[in-house]
Image 1 (spheres, helix red, strand yellow):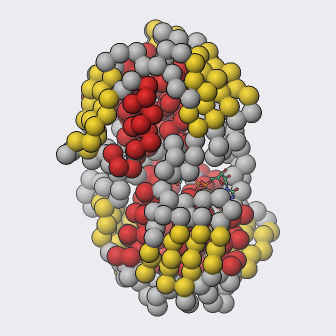
Image 2 (cartoon, rainbow, N blue to C red):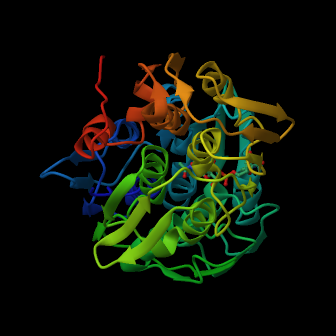
Length: 402
Ligand code: UD1
């Protein structure tokens, strides 16, 4: 099965196209609705985006953009706020709708704002919008309270055109951040250390448009790893980067799956019922919070009891109620969940509340008696290209109703 480009990278690469005038080409772009939202956002600012071929985007930045992210788009996709840093860097101003809470609970952007403030930005908020100004962005030392992915990206994209040197400490280390830095460096930026906790950026005068291929989606790949763990069998995830998924492979290995780096990607196999383990989500290279719903689906069917601790997003347990409707034995207490595995689940109508939770319910349905109907599949479309087609291609009995 072929793994597509990473949602969490391509959205930021698209935002970075605001940094230079001219024509960019992105390859390995997934056909997902979050990319459509980012296309609408870039278009609303004055850019032209087309899909010249499968998996490709051509993005034309004619300059003179309207530095604004309107409410309907930020509401549709919180990641829209990463345009703030680059717009400030180019235009000295940005107007971005304030993101509300979401299904994971409150998701503040205080670290984004504090980081940009250290570079010289000033903020006012009124009528649901944040207005940012900067006469001149000046490099600074930015120590993040927590290795926030979005804050690291926003500050990095502002700092590339700031005057002088910026050092981000306690930076997030996700592979998608290294991908963004590689893209920016190809554009002419001077970034060292992306993918580690200390990122050093020397500001440059100007950047140029480039062509780039998006890093493979480790979260999409993890979804199919879990599908194999639940249904049994053997799959090669073509294009997956096992080196980006070390902790996941280690965990599913402890549960009894076999994984191996393959010249084509990642090979995974499950030939018996898995056993339970405890797990805790942590910033990269720890176990991603985005993997957690799939791992809970695995634990719900494993032999034994597993304790899951969520350390990134406090409210990311809501989908468990849906899994319980399918017969899973799970109790939650604060940011912990105790999962007692059962032999089989029981197919039921359930609702997807977000991208990953929706995918986790579908794969849980692979080992549920009878039919599982997952409502609101549009959440899954935000992050998965042809999820149903991919699962059906490896033998799942799954179809799209709406
Ligand atoms: C990104 C990913 C998301 C992933 C998450 C953590 C995208 C589009 N989304 O989200 O899929 O689950 O990383 O790996 O790339 N926080 C603050 N203040 C801030 C910023 C963050 O308190 O200014 C908190 C958040 O509420 C959360 C934690 O920090 O508890 C981590 O958030 P962050 O790493 O910023 O996640 P996102 O970039 O929003």
